[in-house]
Amino acid sequence: MMPVIPDTGPEVLPSGGFVRPANVFATRITGDGSSGYLAEPGRYQLYASLADPWAHRALIVRGLLGLERVIGLSLVDPIRDERGWRFPAATGGVDPVSGARFVSDLYLTTDPGYRGRFTVPFVWDTRSQRIVENDFQQITVTFETEFRGYHRPGSPDLYPVPQRAEIDALSTLIYHAVNNGVYKAGLATSQAAYEEAFDALFSTLSALEERLTRRRFLLGSNITEADVRLYPTLARFDAVYHTHYKCNLNRLVDYPGLWGYARDLYQLPGFGDTTDFDQIKRHYFQTQDWINPSRIVPKGPYVNWLSPHDRDRMSARS
Image 1: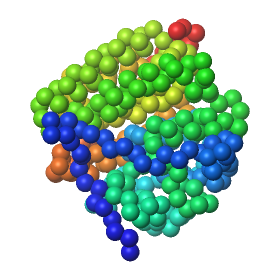
Image 2: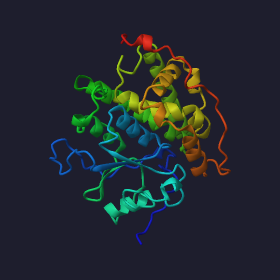
Image 3: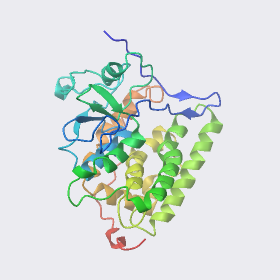
């Protein structure tokens, strides 16, 4: 039996700042197969969680681009134990594709000497029986570029060539200050590290609020990769990060532009149908017991994500 490295609490610097470990499986799937991994239907399986924000973006892109029949999907249970992500009772606690019981099984099959964290999302090659990619920053771009020949007709171009530099710059800001910013605030172990992350988070949210009063989506009238990256954090903000991670200067609903924008996305196919608030709350409040030792899951907040947003009138504005 292969050893399992416990999936424990966060890694922090001596200063008290949270550090996100690097992803180590970065082989690329390519449209021409030059990497040794050809983008083709039925070969790859996406492993993801409805609770995890990094996996959420991969689920959104897979749906938006119509890749459901091209790239398979295995979902894990939202509750992790000391062995990490497990497969749900609905599938008998076993992944039907690989026969694994835990995500760690697939990591250690790929590399028996692996000693990192067992994270989702990742892409599994059913042919070579190994993890190809677990870089959440790259997986969505791979779906958008290397699988282009399999996109559903009429699906959006989430990573258009003329806008890639702007998308990348905005996505970098969103990652450091917002996506990872909530973690840097919530998992900090010093007051100074917490306040630095807190201030960067809310100054960036204010800038995004201003931006979204002038345009429907982050780059104008069309959804792009930048919107996919921002949405999962917004979806979790009031339900989790505001209280659980002490990000309590404002709620999402206190920003008219951001709240309308988040509802606009939620009501589009690919976003709301991959947003499971029950799994999100159970994951954070019942697995991060160094923050919430009682493991009690809050009942609220009570907000209507289906209320009218009136942002479609901004479609032609940039």
